[in-house]
Length: 298
Length: 229
Image (cartoon, rainbow over all chains, first blue to last red; front, side, top):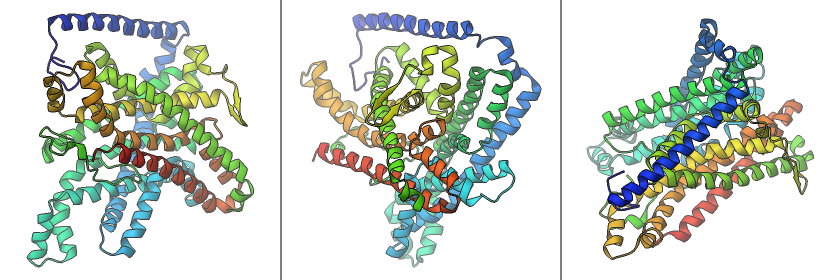
């Protein structure tokens, strides 16, 4: 990087030459490591055509895309829809003026944020949907419900932070012209907060999409499920894992790009809204930036 | 609830494995993540590209896929990655190939997030701070150790805490891949005691909530201690 950074000054000609040498040495080392990996893969027969053939066969491509990717996307999407509803309900509940409403909402949100999704999936699979006969439907709804609860709790925090990010004067002005609490929320605060929330919802979908693979703990569904019949038939574990993992990466990169695009269109250059983890106060004051003229964290 | 109370020692051992997984993976991912972060903010273009690629790939891959790779794939390329040479026993805990594979997966996965947290910390220090430090004549080591890194580390603490809380919860995936940690025990119990599923879930969930609260309490205490008034 030629621009001066906070870590080091702009480099002069001697330093640049030194950095070039480092780059070349590091480049050779990395190429060596990659070459060794490829050599080991070919020596152990992982690069043989037969092991990769299923991923070029239309029948298997169709199965991966329809029974795998499509189901995974459906699960993630259903979970996010549910999570938005759950999040709105409890996020606004946490902002309530009534202690009797605020406390239970806080408890529910903190609980589902702290419990591992795996536990939720096992519980939903056995206890909630235990009577569903069809295995794939049972898995589907167990995963969707678990992800709804977890992502909903995370989104509740996002929504709360989003509503709090609307300038205070907006609510005060609305109260001043005689609006009721509900009106202030639905007519003034929520429409403005939605702008901030939408990119965060899309980012959360990346998390939900990755977490659908946790359905592996019960019966598995979607991309993670489709891998097994392929590698038990062709005995091509390494290629299958690379292909399936690659599909997750591609879809997630597309989603991230979408979130950033929407962010630029709706909010401008600021970072996507982030919330602190369980137990931390959400608007983190960063005291050592006080009096700092440079740009601190937004 | 009886199932949990009657087998309380089994449950505790399950959470013991969870804590072991967390501690070992946290240390390893902190080391790898720091190296990655150094490469990512450093002046060498090739290393920067490598670290960026690694972080992008790992962050977008589900943890289950990485576990699957270590369970099924890695051993087929390098025999030592089967981890069958690992056989350590400490105080009633058995650290076998399953445990090692879980630690490897969790560490590789978490190190990408550690790298991002540290990088965010460095990026949050404003340029003026370093410029002022150079202007008063501090040498490179002084700029780093007295001005930039203390601020960067403080700013990196909240995202680091989030990362480690996520790691603690992610250890539950090991329960699916042969480690008898809390999540693995919870699945076994749920299978065996069909009439007590609510109690079993609540008991194990409570265990995780307590662990998460301990980690976040430590994080908050550290933040307080290092806060500049």
